Picture 1: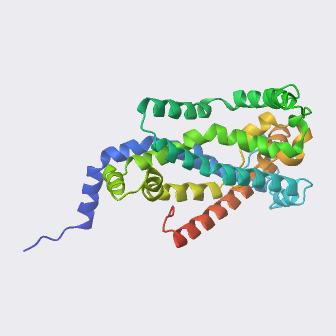
Picture 2: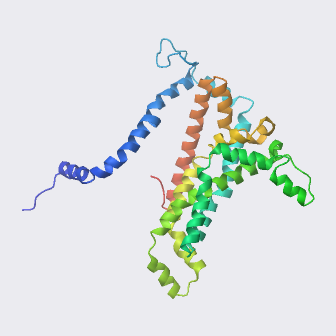
Picture 3: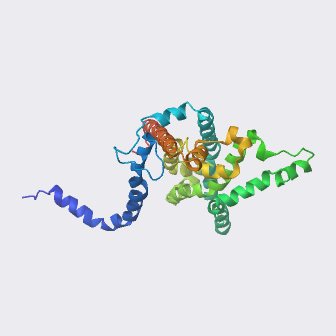
Length: 310
């Protein structure tokens, strides 16, 4: 007579067999709980007139204002500019920068010289570890009137341009710098995915007459397709989250027209101006928009490509 397995026992055996994996996950889960979930109760100040030192969980001593701060932000003079600049800067980085680590990883995977390959990898990773403050200082020195870019322009008979005070040039400066700083580090996931490809597939393709370009196109690229779609979903879900920290370091009031984003506005008005309720309301609004974009991107990806986060 065959014994009937009990669901409770199966579950206990599963937990016991994977206890080491759960212990590895534990520090990450604790970190997320402490720094991502516990502070979430603070979003209630988006619906209050809050100032530091005032209780915000007491209904008796709290001035609840409903959607006042959301409405003020929507009707504010900078709403259109902030949304436009934040979206455009993120969109430019998505269009011009998303494919760079993909192409770089595919080309790097084709290198056969191990020493040179490691050198290129290391050199491409280094910008990621350079502080934003240092990178901003480098950028500002390059685009200054007497910087290296204007020196090169003058060498070819051109007229120096004050790139740091011209709003039209800021999106290009931000996008190029962001791509240079991140493309090497972003290529790690693609290289890791390609490292799991069976070498016999390349040998079989070579015997069938496929050159290295066709091997890359029909073997290497399909191997990283799931990673591409997952990262694309994340990128679309953060279209209203430009790198505010870096922008704060390189912008100035003369380029607010194209450089002022939601994050920099929150820093000036919410943190420096002490308007914490407004800052929380705007942050909550942007989080909801980003989640909506993420959900839409995930749904479309699951429908048309079978790759999705959930």
